[in-house]
Length: 469
Image 1: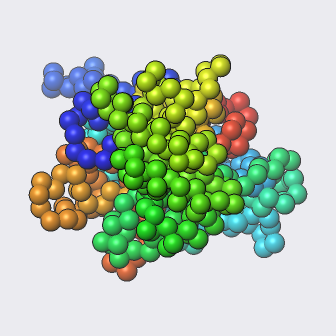
Image 2: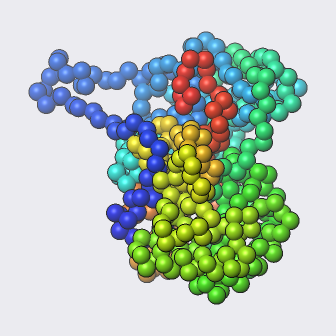
Image 3: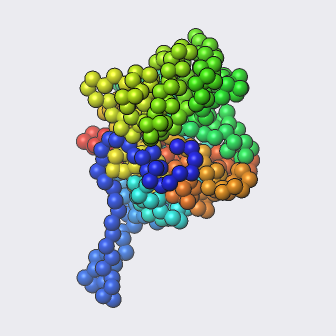
């Protein structure tokens, strides 16, 4: 879906097939009588504790009460459990801010990374198209590396070495004038390196317009198990080859081919030659969301040409953002669809894209938690190897510019996190950088790392549901 189209056509792109309970905030205010004596909603909400520790997928507006309880923090001590090779994300909610530092002893098999968290403004809530909204307000989201972040919340990643010995590592969180003991229990389980489980589409012009460093941005996303890439054209391959082929765990590489059979056949042969011996497979989506019989027949003719040129599941995968139809036969190698669940006996390869409640958590800024944390459990349950995100870097309103010169209206999420389709998509995974600074990643990006892993990979305290945190 790569242009401005009617809302009713866009809605399917924001739906994912697995079921989650609906998450609709509803508050009834009973203050019309002029007295609060019998109206509990009139009471000022309990702001919660002055200090709390929550996981990376907890989304709390700056004005929201702090959660009363936490599976990691009992008010006096922080307790975590992690496997070898795991990265755990923690938010330190400390109303009022001030420097925060998380430390472990020198030589411990643990690396700690701190981040200042920027607050982004939502003035217009996301609509039903994105599964609803937690509401307007300021949300903590942008991550900027900082050894001792002073923001509220502060964010820390704790990475356990893959060769760490099982046992307990003691550390300390210093925040708000307090020194809080931290106990990290390293489980006798070793996780393999994180494969690429998400493809996040990017338009390279966005980084160029921002004078940013695309290679650094790609590397940052790859550290979260996310491939940040456009669908690469043949003429751009010499520049992008080493940048993409060097990403650990990357198997499927998005490329571009024509929707005209003759031109596509030549391009497919050249792509197959370019990827020979790499262990990676190119794929392309030349026709996006075909809805009519004529569009599906056009895709079938293109698919026949791709197969005749040597395309197939192990050489060049022709993909379509659609469900299987009889007219496709067995010529489509990959279906990318909201109905991506693999059922018993299913013989087609399937991915899915984006998400919206109640079927999956949304990636928009004002989504109800746990957001993208749900994706991994859905992907594991329904055997979905790749989750497709569109659009990862939407820093200019490229689809609503109405004939004005590109790049179009600049979008500044620090003042109003609005973008696609009249400002209702807050789904960027990195915010546009200020001058002379690399793009801060969104706190939603690291949510994809623990989310898109099999059960047992996500840190969870005993007795808590797997998606907690």
